Amino acid sequence: MPNYFTDNSDIQFHFKNFDSEQVREVISLFEENYTESLHYNFAPVSFEDAMENYRAVLEVVGDLSANFIEPRAAGVDELGAVFVDGKVSYAEGTKKNLQQLAQADLMGMILPRKYGGLNFPFFIYMVAVEMVSRADASLMNLFGLQDIADTIRKFGGEELAEEFLPKFSTGEFTGAMALTEPDAGSDLQAVKLSAYQNEKGEWFLRGVKRFITNGNGEVLLVLARSESGSKDGRGLSLFVCYGDETVKVRRIEHKLGIHGSPTCELQFNDTPCKLVGTRRMGLIKYVLDLMFRARAGVSAQALGISQAAYEEALKYAKEREQFGKPIINLPVVANILMDMRVTLESNRSLLYSTAIMVDLKEKLEEVIENLKKEGKPFAETNARLKNVTRLANLLTPMAKYIVTEASNKITYDALQIHGGTGYMREFKVERLARDARITNIYEGTSQLQIVAAASGVFSDVLVDFIAKKEAKSYDSGLTRLQNFLKDIRIIFNECVKYVLDKKDPVFQDVAAKDLVELYSYLYVGYLLLDEAEKDSRKRFIANRFIINSLSHAKRNAESIKDELFSDILHSHEILI
Image 1 (tube, rainbow, N blue to C red):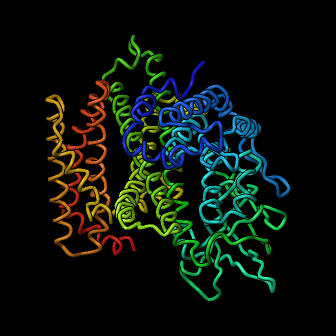
Image 2: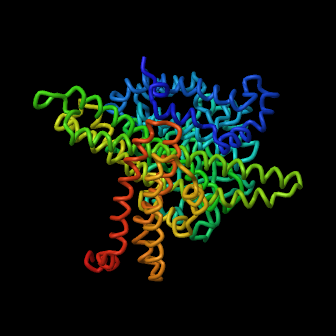
Image 3: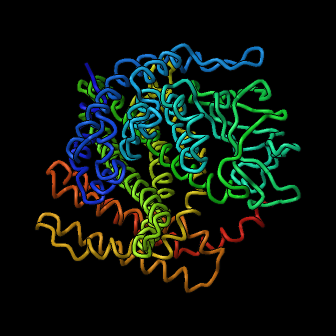
């Protein structure tokens, strides 16, 4: 029987190499230096024990994904979620999927054991999200919303955690992030839905939210304007409420893809709610933290879709004969497949590295909070946290941009390899192409990810990482690739200087896309170079990625320095 974990050689490579100093530190922090085993007899007693535990669970996820979720995916896509008499119902396949995931204790993977969860790190959870997404991308939007419960844990206090988290872990509750409004899409500072208190100090919600993924969930995290008269993000707070009779689902959207995931328009009619954390911190702290993880989750979703599309294309190319031979023997087809494979594996390296950095950032934050409570010095840890935060703040939007854009390209190419048959509903690749399209739109469009990553690029936050890799002695077979990356570094530095010397903020914004891409070549290139030292199979991936990146880097530089950029700066005059 297939298994999306054990059958995937690249995931197996990464899992085997999840033994870096960073990973060991992250897992030790999750397990409180393995003292969790003193309270829970199923908690690991060592790093090796923890990895075996993760492996066992990921094998279960891989089995469920390959043998149960994937066979139901076409039916889920065809039926979709339905809206009848004001009620939302999942497709029958989605119901069965959620039931099986809950029975396997997988709906609380990242929640602490005290609430019935598995206490897994985020980077292990991302592996699971990728596999589930490969099977059915729409299911990720239910399975992958565990971060909602984690936000309640981090910021809501013990009372709220005890009320909500245990039922998230059992699968009795699914959640939703109710952020977007008809007139407040990506600009969440424009949120108008109001939160008000009665004479007893109890909170209520009134207003409308739109494009809410799984808005029919049992528990809703709602961004609302708690400060009357305010107009920006400082007047917003975060609330948690039940999806009870005061929350009316006005409609669900009819979408291009991910049909199994209902996207709802919600009306809150004096809905009772509870404040999460502190007033006025809803957007500037809590939602930013939540979206930080959500964007990585969408990257994992896109990666899963990419894997599925590649597998479909490879299988079809081996079976489809033209001109007396399988089309995989046609160089033009083989070349597309090789590029898909290189992109897929380089994206996985970027995503997993990003998720580990997110874990480290969040655990260092907890360490500092504990040091403060104990009255112990924390200046050294705080300095380290600032550096890790800068890295995470760069890598998260960079990964979202790179991985989701690539998913659209990979599914496009997979459909192209299928030819006309791929355009037909009978073929899985048609669904994958539709599902991929949303990934570079929701949880922040690609354009917003570029904006988010740009400051880290201009400030060169990877300078120490890159300098260390440039000084490293690779074996003779990899030195050539290292020199190519040094060439890209020179190109990047020249481009940044060129842009900054103009002292034109608008020009900087226009050039940001090319600069973010240039920076990503360096980071991912060195990740792959290190991987190539460990596994000869990775040498091909590193070689093709880095050589292509050098070519792309030259085009990025030409684009930045091209006079056409000045036309872009004034294009609004033409468009108007």
